Amino acid sequence: DTVRVIYPEIAMFDFNKADIKPDAKATLTSFSNVLKKYDRIDFIINGHTDNVGTDEVNRNLSQQRADNAKSLFVSNGVAESRMQTNARGASNPLETNDTEEGRQANRRVEMLLYERK
Image 1 (cartoon, rainbow, N blue to C red):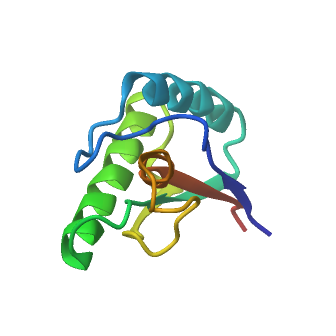
Image 2 (image 1 turned 60 degrees about the vertical axis):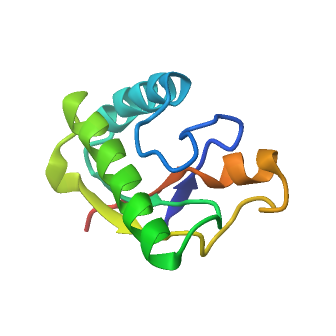
């Protein structure tokens, strides 16, 4: 009973950075407007990384990415109480980590939406 929202076509983060890139920020801001219309929908923000670096570094970086996405949603009027964040590190790649393009796609946040009971 969840919906997974991803934006694989958008480069969300630079290597080893947690700051949301401008194009991704615009997309997530637009998504904020949708979320505000459906206030019975809560969601989990999962942060992800590529596989470069240690598990600990990637876990911390993915948490920072999720936290930054949460802050963006809050700054755009989405209630903080509707969100949780998780660090996923490099554990769930969308694409191969053997190419720069694949690693870029893996540096992302995903949202899992579900209806509040």
